[in-house]
Image 1 (cartoon, rainbow, N blue to C red):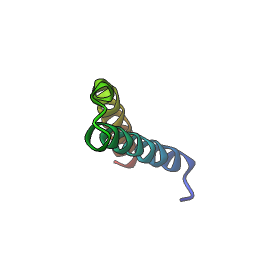
Image 2 (image 1 turned 90 degrees about the vertical axis):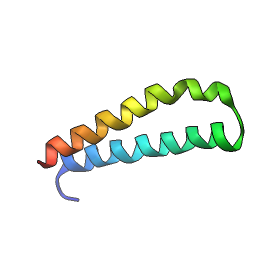
Image 3 (image 1 turned 30 degrees about the horizontal axis):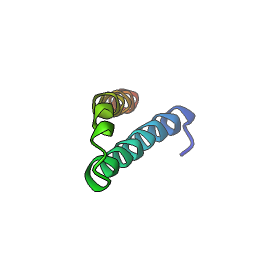
Length: 58
């Protein structure tokens, strides 16, 4: 990727999805129901980073 803005936005989306995956592993595989309280924060981050990337590439 040669555009640094697109690279940064794509990295943010990737990082947010990794965080979501980690959280889902905690909740579903490790049965850590306390971790579920972070779901709203992470889904908001995924939405925001995805929207930012979409707006940048539109």
